[in-house]
Image 1 (tube, rainbow, N blue to C red):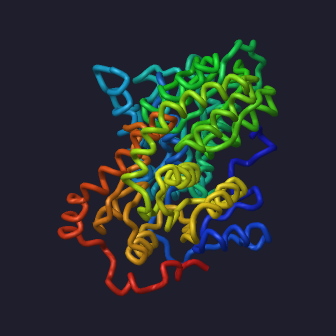
Image 2: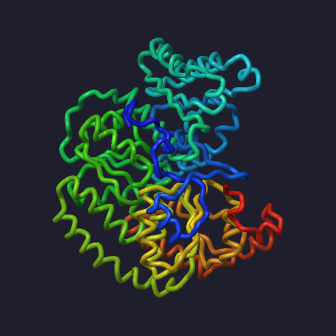
Length: 480
């Protein structure tokens, strides 16, 4: 991901599709034939942009201030990252819970006409003088990108004025990419360029970089750290709840892995190119199969393949009787899954542990990694609907209303209002990953199915903002 190698825009690499309505069998066949084409929507309802992902990826870093060079509305979605940060502090035993230090330059009509560079300068100066941080991250936006404000030059000049603070520009203009994971890449590109700077660092025996996004709970962090410690590895958990010191230790690691399949995949390739750090890129560790695969992947990189098989055998002996009990409660239930590219496919594999049937899958992007997962799922499940959609709830409610699944796993707001029993898989507050997370998530799904009263009452009293005629339409009619 070093400059000149990868632009930070995921569409720049072939084989990535972000708008599609099809079935599991069809998408597998079309991808193999090279027939999948990039599409667009003649109507879209909401879109998660890459600026929000760039901000969320770093918003829990210690001793940092975050400056969004944007209109106020651009940081509205930051509330989720703020919530995760506050909850994460509580789970980690912090007594005085605080918000991230976020400053918005509030680009307005006058700024668009005459430029907003002075606003940015004033905001960064205020950030440094008020908080005295070690790091200031300056996020570009659609507005600042369109009017051409030179955030790089401003950050470089102010860096000379404040030598004790590293001021990092991040080019995450929302219009650059429809694949929101590009926002993660933009953040890591800037970390590599302005903090790591390709400087040699002495290697630290047994150190493993564990890249984790905001939505990973503290319980999941402890589970991943426990599993890696059994392999004799020390964990550099980054960038969530990290610090400048931990960021600088990235090149010292002997290996890297990521909890989320699409969070740091491009950055780990860069670390291999720039610092010769081998990495494991497999799956998100949700469910028995995926947890085994993730575990074996990092064990292979650090040379602990025999040891990991012993550990996996012990873990299976512990959890399989409990999984069997869950299967008796969930066998045959039909489920629709919605989540990020890594999490949705991981959750789809998880339901096989419980004998459930996949009837629908919604995910933001389709690429070679997704193809591997689809091939696996097609061998297990009958034909299921696939919706490649970045935050298009009007399609989701149409599909759910037609398919009428027994359960919904994902971000549940819309499905819950249709009366479907829902289980959140993206709240960042409860365990979902590893061997212990599997048991918690399975029990949660079963409890929701056995106690659906809240969702049914919600459906009676809440009306979704769609006409009845929309539910009769083809859900994918607006995909061109």
